[in-house]
Image (cartoon, rainbow, N blue to C red; front, side, top):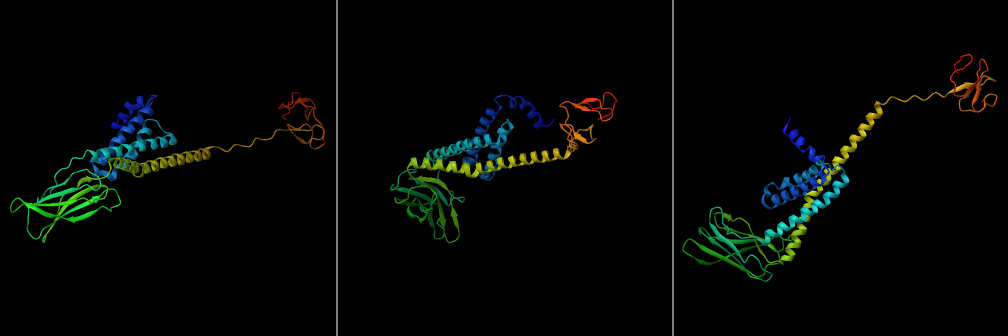
Length: 323
């Protein structure tokens, strides 16, 4: 017995219980929401596989626990993906609200201690960007790159920084103060360009000069859109595909059943012979189609010995002739 067979055997009692479907729906909710949050927030490198995996689990777990009705499964999917979207939106907002910045540096440490302060504010506030240059070879041009993550890109900027001080001959502090940043949620990084090379730091979150209420609503809308456009579409394609496959199997089975059935022979109409003219008379007729003779409701005569017979008789009681 394989591992899967053993698992199915152990789960047999649970799947046959009255609580199987509710348990399956709760388990689906926990697994899909957790997987979505973990993958989108911390394991983004497998993001391309996430929608397919979540959609498969959203279909497979309820089905495994007995929810076979496609309409009910589709209705459950609406609620499930709404919860996933709201959870993702709330998690994105919490990430922004609780973010703790760390100093930025380049891989070769020619740029170190890059920071943006303060992290949060409102439009019109002044934000300071500072970074330390540890190498002065060539003609250095230190720049800060700002990307507004609110989608329109109008706040994106690439600006040169100026030297404000130097601790010694090898460390130079570059600074830039901005008080005209458009409302948004920003990402920033620093770039060093000189005569020989171009060096960049990692990208960091901040600053945020948008109202946090707007940040929450935008995060919620974004989470719901991601849930339905990236995951729910695949889920409903899977529901429709399996419904079509089951329907095709049912039609094929019905066709095979019809082919396998022997053709029914048409019942031979029962007849008797008119005692007056010898014509064949249908069993349910009350007069002869040949001579017009009328018959008693329940009596006929034997064509051989003229004995009175009932319509239900199959042979003559007197002479034994088969009718």
